[in-house]
Length: 131
Length: 131
DNA sequence: CTATTTCCTACTATGTCAATAGGTTTATTG
DNA sequence: CAATAAACCTATTGACATAGTAGGAAATAG
Image (cartoon, rainbow over the protein chains, first blue to last red):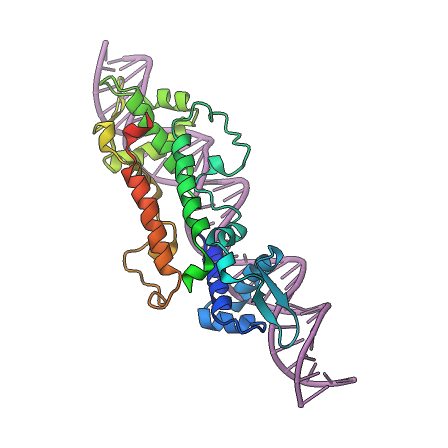
């Protein structure tokens, strides 16, 4: 289940893309348009800055801005940054696969296939596809 | 993220299918083979009985048994019973779609498409495919 | 009647989610 | 230079879900 963090973050990205006129867009405006608590968005947006998805400018006239064109972002990379992982099953969450049953587990191949389908969809979807 | 409930429950179903000789299979045996706490499995298995996925018989010689052939179960129905919903996004979790932004939400169509792909995969996968 | 099994209720520790609160720093503008 | 408006930072909180544990009651076969 994708949490509000991922969903709100995605909507911030769309909002930034739709209202891009070259200048920085204040979070206040985004929060109002999207009807999301500005305070909560601060947390989300901070993560997006740290992850290099967007950039922020302090002070009057400041705000946030995309660093790439909308077609250069995938939904997958946005969600992965905010959700930590978009893995559907804990068994696959760490690359080590350190479950002691991994050799004999009858469900693991299915989870891998499922995870592949999920990733393929989300990483092929571009931010520009949502505008 | 599919929780242990769904994952363990699915493994119980596989175990029941693999060890089916017509008689009832005690949970103790399943717990040992699957290396899962029997006490915890009790909770899961109870839900599966209530949901009509399997049937249980008390007393000596008792245990659990599938009510249908493995090819008649889908992974989707098993997970839905145990997880409550396998919905990927809260906006779609209740049939009412009562989000006030549903008309103008730019992300909703994508979430619906995504949800459709997830459901298609899980409901086309049969228990018999995992044996 | 005894052993074995499901069935039932309750409890609990831990962690995550979805925020809220309040203040500090940075930059623009009049 | 002062007022303003914005990002930036740290901490806290209530509610809920997860992943179990504990102990016993009822049912059934031999």
